[in-house]
Length: 366
Image (cartoon, rainbow, N blue to C red; front, side):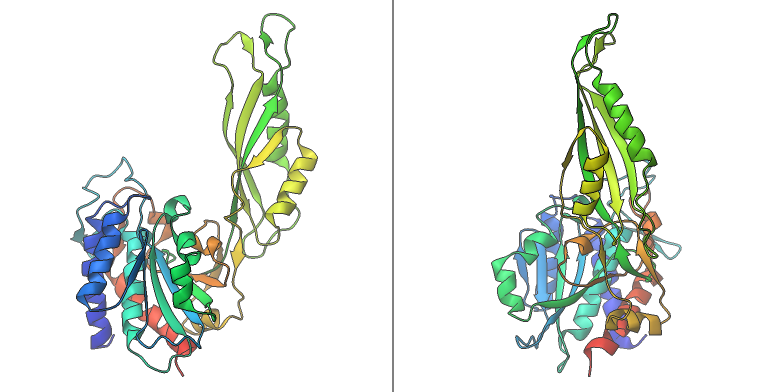
């Protein structure tokens, strides 16, 4: 690691500690957004804020070129009840940095910021670089990357050439998540007729729901992805419209969590479901679709040359909301996300910065 990259890594770790110390639950990221703005301001770098999303462009931004987006998020979930330490006190011990959001996704975020700074003053890049630290990723909220990408001021920044592709910083052990399962959540309702449980009255909505729940638990979509495996459907919540033991319920509702591979559209999934169940089916959202980037994409090929492997991710990220190819990769380990006493290794951040730089260099430098 050369001196310049080492200095950037030191600064990234200091920034990560600052971010850990600031509560930033989804929709409550105002103060971490301010801290990121202050970080750029101290360096004299122009930057912009839209809601709780902060972005900046490289010094020699050229409207005639398309852009590469470096994106990660600064919101967190609420701390797991099993924490044995203060989740907002950054604690460095045995090569680890503990604290809420250290791994998901503070480490990837500050590593991408350091990578952006490395390329900031370089001339003659083949692409512009845009750094975006965004909000509401943990809840797939509309005030995060989606707000930024649809904002007129942001569009004015990226100009007509737009964004060619992106790196999404999430903890993947610096391996390449080239595909993600989509998330489709359904509210399903069975209707019956209330009656007294002791008599032959009513039409039990719960029994109707059970028939459809059995279908959801046993049906298998035939197309299985090499990267993402099969479509997975899980019934996760069920409730009726009454609490009394002696009343036949007139309504029973349940929730289905569906993880969709890249071989199906949401519309195809819904068509199969509606053909096979009797209950009413209402999708909560059609936003979090499955996504993939070609193995032949220059960024993926660059990663392969660096000894990185690729895989399909069962979890969703802001990658699902991007209308352009995106590679999910970053320091840290997804298995630590949302766990008590969350941590990231300091060396993971340092090595992550170096690998990000190497991955980009062979793609955007002449």
